[in-house]
Image (cartoon, rainbow over all chains, first blue to last red):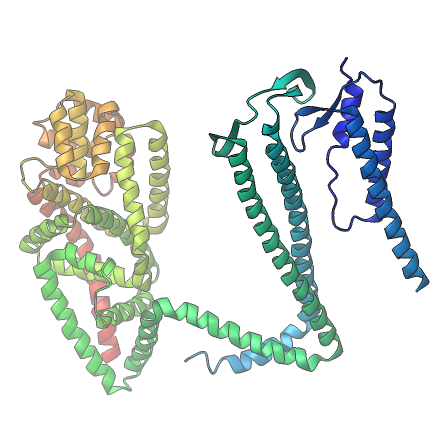
Length: 96
Length: 525
């Protein structure tokens, strides 16, 4: 019943710590992570349990798989938007 | 005042000399400032992470009581988990610090977290301020570098100003504490030169005045006894400026006349004075008793001694202000007592110090044993006096040595009455030593044995033990103290001992005294 694999991924995707102006490389890395998480969550079996790690501690709280999936999708979208913005701003700078 | 003429030439010189250094120094300054900036950035990052963690914790705590129980994976060590349930969701144990915990509700815990977050934010703000400050400084140093590279004039002006400030600050720092003595030194040096050349009549007047003061001192010394004078010279800052001048002059002349002997004597005296001071500190009354005994029996010798002691202290001169250090050394000796009474570790420590002192004595005054002996004897005398005074009642000889002996004897006797006597004796240290002594009898010196024999009535058993243990103290005290214990009784024995010591010393000391006065005479001549 329990799905250790799922737990690990969700742990990584706990809470996005967004700095005000993350550099482009870091943003890229985060997007990759989120992509993996979303893929893993979407490929889990229905009866798999998903745990979410409490930040800065070792406790894993049981979470809902679909909720986690949707949450991570949202986060991924936001990150992509940020990435786009940065790229656009850089382009505009280059043009200027 | 004196500094004012100096800074001009110094400033110009420093400016000229600093010019080549500037580039490297400025570069280094910039490096350091940049280091600070990067350090602040790292710290800010760390604190931001902490703040982020607290945010997450706060969110979790705020939602924790929403459900009665949570299904969780309970961590068993860093890598093992087992499924479990989190219950009591509204019962939080908060670490207050130092392994103290407080039980509180989730809401209260949220408040605590908020409080901590405030602190974190404050530190972050402070770090940011520091970082900004140093960033601006880095900019300034960059500008300075450019300026210095471009135009040396501006830089030179700055250098001068800096040098002025430095000089003034240094002089102020140096003069404020010892301003009076230093001025007095200068004046004295001038006087000495003038006297030698016989140029100044005012100097003669001063010398006459000084002689009068000396006579007064002698009279006072006779009245007050040696111990008082010694103590006054060494410890009391109350002595008038005139006396200080005298001391300073004496010091100068002494150095001229006798260098090696004087230095050695100084060391010896210092050690002795330490002994005196320690005991004196413990009990001032002792000095009075000792003084009386001295004054009555030995006036001439006392004079010599006084002169010697004064000269020694004078030699120490301004450094006498370091008397506190002397006190420390004496405090060490009481530690010895403790050591003797008590435990191996303390014994070792004391032994080391004793060895160091011995080495000093040997190195400094091998040829001047006579001085060492008298000086040592005087402290021993003080000890005896002190003991007597402590007793005050004259009933028991409660000098430190005696107290030890009693303690040891008591220990052997296993009588609490002796311990009570110790308590009466005044000093906590001694009381401790007594307790320790009860535990361990060993390390008492021959002195103790002698004292025991003399005092004997109390403990016979302690004496043999003292013999065994005495070796350490024998070495330490043998030169100085051994004669005293032989004398045993506080007042009478001490006097003869002192006489002997004084007589020995007096031969040399008289010369010294003559030096003391001779310097003046020489100047007059």
